[in-house]
Image (tube, helix red, strand yellow):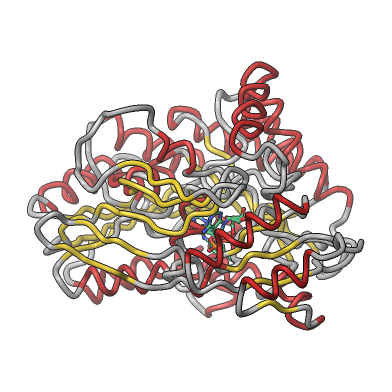
Length: 452
Ligand SMILES: Cc1cc2nc3c(=O)[nH]c(=O)nc-3n(C[C@H](O)[C@H](O)[C@H](O)COP(=O)(O)OP(=O)(O)OC[C@H]3O[C@@H](n4cnc5c(N)ncnc54)[C@H](O)[C@@H]3O)c2cc1C
């Protein structure tokens, strides 16, 4: 698909780094979803200033050229996938940590800052950026904001939205908008900051963020417990919530996941039981909290072990950290990301397994159980996605809605869950989404076709 006449030369004159190199374009076309566009995008723009972002969008609106914002390209929903006739706007070069204020406990950063880099910088002054996606080493703060990313610590500290106080956003016509504030409280006006969080680059391009930091806990303690089966483990996780305990992490792995970890890593987790729960507690009351959590888990567990120091705690968490790489060592997976009320987690696990059996596919399930956020990974041999895998994935989405949940807890909608979003939110909410989009991006250049 060709670009409008004059667009490329105008872009070239306004922005330093504009590329049409086929190798660079091929790399910028993809995220980690496995979605492959019919052909690569037409232009890759790598701005290093906010003005360059503004100029790119102003020209794109003027010439009506679609723009796909991009951070680390680690998304798994196809939201950063770009095709022919489109511009990829890679903002990973805006990667400055401008300020970390230990008194106000905030960080002011560019969108291209890698999540783990911010966490390390905050750690040097005794603070922490709480959202911790497992992709922290490869994802950016801008991408985390655009997908409202979650992670293991969300059960206590909330998702990305809970850490964003204010944003600088370039709108489709190049206008620079500032939302929110640098204070922890503030209720003036509509909550425009939240509107942009999770909008997957469809409403504006994040070029700056003011983020809330938290004190780095002086201690984090861990307990792991094995159960006879995954339903017993899920019931125990629900019991932790019902007992009003406050874990800083509560993860669950099913038997198939434990077996594949053992196979890949030479470990023996699956010998302890048919499912594993790993919980952490942090802060000054961590000792009391982890003992209380261990007691609740112990009621139905077949094996319980508490970490006594950092090293033994890290060992207990290892199975969770190794789950995805171990599964991927033996083939491809479709990564699902449903979230159900915690009280229905046991039922969700059971019915996901039934779906796998019905379609003759292998499903590995692990969960941020404290949030009810279940990741069923539907495995298949390397190559094209078999029909049974897609059909199983669709049934899993249907199950999430039936159980009163959502089709995505943290990965976003992108291209993959577009139809399901419409089913989840209904026609009225969908119409409001589109009205907001039309108000902020009247020409429709920002990441068209994604989300809604
Ligand atoms: C191994 C692995 C583990 C993962 N673990 C987790 C996890 O634990 N939790 C979780 O939530 N996700 C996880 N993910 C998914 C992914 O890392 C997140 O969605 C992440 O937030 C994407 O960030 P990114 O910088 O890579 O964004 P990209 O993939 O580049 O983009 C994602 C979306 O954000 C938009 N975007 C990017 N930057 C901007 C910007 N500055 N302004 C506006 N829009 C923008 C893009 O257009 C796109 O819609 C994982 C992925 C992998 C590969």
